[in-house]
Image 1: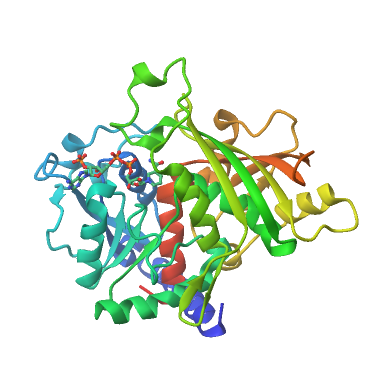
Image 2: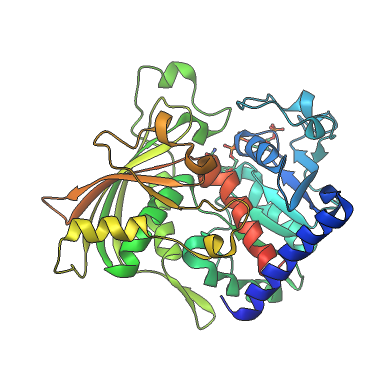
Length: 378
Ligand code: NAP
């Protein structure tokens, strides 16, 4: 991060804090935001996480024609563990394509409509922070995990030029990709990865509310999730690659992914085996454990509101991480990594767990937007 960006971020944070102290009304200073797809699985997480957000305030909610015109409380079948925020309940759901007042828009739209709608709002001048797959691999759209590849934000200038607008899109990766990319980032940085195999066990909330019928998933495991393996085999290479000479240059290791839907509600778990290009001479397992435990990035340096203190949480118990016990670490923003041990075929094996609708979706998008604000890009 350059000094000017960091200074802008810190000044902006000081401004917000100062204003809170002087007026006692921090709500007025928060940036009004819209959520597209606000009634869905990811959309509801946005609404929940925005309730007490210190920088952003939920101002508009948008969903399909099935929901438009209704009060949010009547349109959304609220399924989260906390009550629906009272300020959200009375918002009237807007139609996709409506003019919005918010300059910052979070998208949790179904991918059948996300691509066009996100382009529309970015072309109109809004900053769109998206969860959907549609624009993730565009040549000038950052696929962002702030702890790993904040320098990819340099692509925004090029994107603004293409659109002829001050608006732009930033995306977060697929929910399993986020857990995988975070768990392996310190290893790629220190040792270089040669090849990797990952098998996921993904929760049903990852399929959205209409998702997997109970009759199909109870007492069962489904060894197929449409399109998922391709995303997990390509997105980490973009994330762990570089922005150089005006385009993205992917990391060059090989990934093989197998994905399974399992009957947990939240939390995608994955087993990972990988080979490294350079092996430290001293104990490899200790070096890998240290690299994971010490992993940190710009969100921690800037103390962004949604940043976990430790983005990777090393778990020592032989039978952890587990979705029910570990998914909520640091409000669902920390990825748990455990069972780090030698692999008889590759070099290392381990288990990682990510909360799919928080660090894997809405929480990740909020952290992305906080980084944009801290860098003066909103
Ligand atoms: P979901 O529960 O099915 O919600 C989809 C949302 O899109 C709903 O608000 C729905 O509104 C809206 N929508 C559907 N068709 C529409 C249309 N024609 N016009 C306007 N709005 C429309 O899906 P989800 O699981 O939240 O996923 C949302 C996006 O995030 C997807 O692209 C998904 O791939 C991605 N994602 C999901 C996860 C996860 O863990 N669930 C993680 C990462 C990324 P109505 O309620 O009015 O139909």
